[in-house]
Image 1 (cartoon, one colour):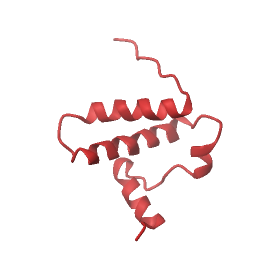
Image 2 (cartoon, helix red, strand yellow; image 1 turned 120 degrees about the vertical axis):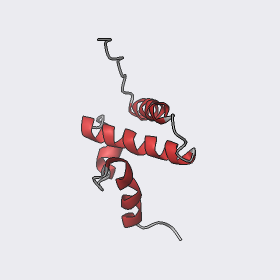
Image 3 (cartoon, one colour; image 1 turned 90 degrees about the vertical axis):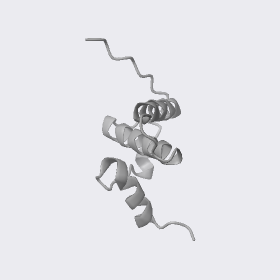
Image 4 (cartoon, one colour; image 1 turned 180 degrees about the vertical axis):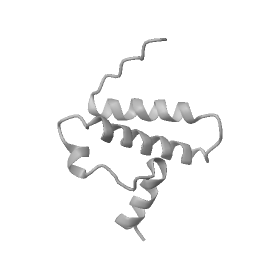
Length: 85
């Protein structure tokens, strides 16, 4: 049995807690996603990475960075390193 839209929203609600997912138009547009949509996509991808490794502690940053790299590459977004304080 395939998941319904509501069950997918429930799963996607876990990382950000808002229960909203990027719309198909936003996700497939030729324009890069907005900062809010981009952050949400990274949150979801990082969550699924953590889930795949059974939420072992100590890897949250690695999950986030890998997800960020994957999503940014998908949209051709170049991320610059933050300057050191």
